[in-house]
Length: 231
Image (cartoon, rainbow, N blue to C red; front, side):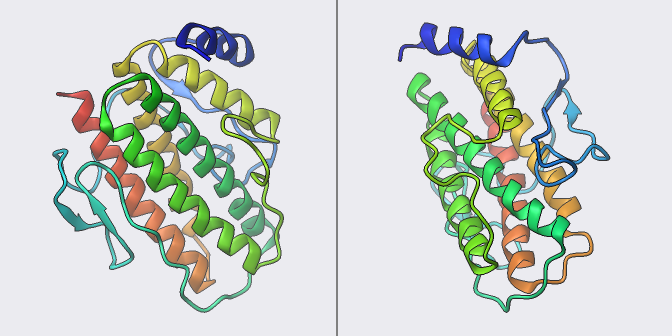
């Protein structure tokens, strides 16, 4: 599908786009997971600073808390779930399932942008998101939870609200490479907000470890997108 066709499809599916601050649509899992807790504001405009190196390149640096590494281009290594399992509340289970959708949404968006634009940051962070999704899927399997992203092709989501969010952000990012960097900033900031809230009251060591890694990685990715946006 070429750029114009993809853009038209996304505009139809995602509705009218507005300039300025963007509020990310909540998924059908009410009050759970990325983009889905109404008590957390996910509207913002402009770049937000975060952790990680401030320049693109291939040098490796720690991504936080000794739970993986991240490179200056925004890529990072597989987050480990090698920690004791624990007990999750129903809310925490719903949040974990929603995390899988958020990681897939981010990876699918960045891969679509990588197909459209020359900036290497999209492809490299998309690969990192694939690794994050694999870690979340490991946890879903460990806790006997259904994976909402199973058997879903790129750009497709079983949750209509997540699908609408993806379509809207895809349409926005396909307007220009600069806009795509902005979408990356939005997605990573929303992920940071969600992960910080998800960690509150969480006692399961394995889930905590993965969330902490994902949080550090999202902060690093946010810095990478901000750096590319200001070049």
